Amino acid sequence: MMKSSFAIVVLATLELSSSTRADDWPQWRGPQGTSVAAAGDFPTKFSPTENLIWKAKLPGVGSSTPIVSGDHIFVTCGIEGQDSVLAYDWKGEVVWQKSLGAERAGKHKNGSGSNPSPITDGKNLIVYYKSGTVASLTHAGDVNWQVNLQEKYGEDTLWWDLGTSPVFAGGNIVIAVMQEDESYVVALKPEDGSVAWKVDRTFPVQAETAQSYTTPYVTEIDGQQTIVIWGADRLTGHDPKDGNTLWTCGGFNPEDKAMWRVIASPGFSDGIAVVPYGRTKFTAAVKLGGSGDITASARLWERTDLGADCPTPVASGGKVYVLSDRGQINCIDVKTGKDIWVDAIPRASANYYSSPILAGDLLYCAREDGVVAVVKVSDTGMEVLSTNDMGELIAAAPVPVRNKLLIRGAEHLFCLGAQ
Image (cartoon, rainbow, N blue to C red; front, top):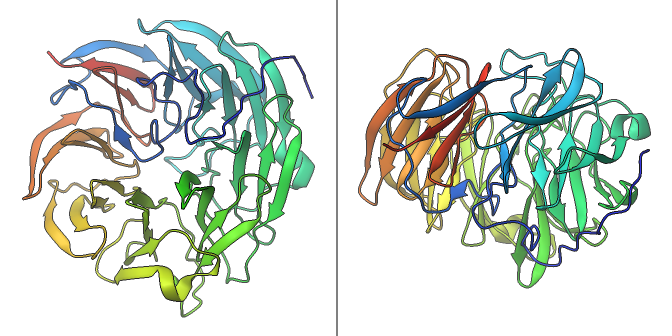
């Protein structure tokens, strides 16, 4: 393990750090982890040539979403068989590049060894890979420390490519490992990568159902900072101080079916989690909070006629937008589960693997074939403003930040702006 002395980041509130700027994009789903961007003047029509500020050729394969902190854009990928991370400036130039050990390449056509998105507290960058490597680097590219969870606790037993991103919670770096047999949640100390705590999260389920590719969500519930984790047919709340389970909500697989792994994370609004599951067939809402088994009291509603396998729902202002893998959008009242409206992006043979991002009244939806739809949403319906072909596969989520749109394709990082 490599060590260096640098300030311990104290995260006593929901804020990532006092060093994180309001116009940063410090993690997969943006500043609050909700897939909602700050207000801005973002492009609604673009291509590899139209409204293009710059594009940078990526040196390797990765499906992680870029993050933004200060003067840097950080991207992870595999380079010549190595887990790697790059920092770009706002001209699209590489500031630095660092390799961190042998890569475990992806299995899925849209997967990679670099599916988890990096996170930053505004001072240091945390990266995580399918190989099990977790590392902390300064924004200048110096390695603070590096550990490997799989060397410590065994290789992952996922059937596909690890995709869970780390989060900051309770002053630590928290990673959920949800897989066949033994699953766990671990917190690493930011100063040296040592283990602050590790708790078991193993439940008795059928084959593959324990496997989860979701990312935890950190929020405050009734004055208690809580890590909300989805997987193995259960939504659980954990205390960031020690990882102990505060509450558990089940009932998502009453017939105890096999092969019910989950990819999409829940959407969150108004203290409610909207949870897609059952391979596109089901969506349910859970009121967060309480103690012990909250299944009977917390389940608000369930739908058996819609869902999403890969795209994570985005919720804001009491409404949740559920984008199906085939492009249908249900705008749902978070509290009642009733449709406010239902519409669809023009269909194609390709699916949506990327999660939608909401920027004001614009919903950015990236399809695997490289077409990004810009959808204007309102209380009464939606309008597809444009469908923009970027010319290469897209699995990462779009990033609307600082009046620009960052799109990470299979071959390029694009920076786009409004005319």
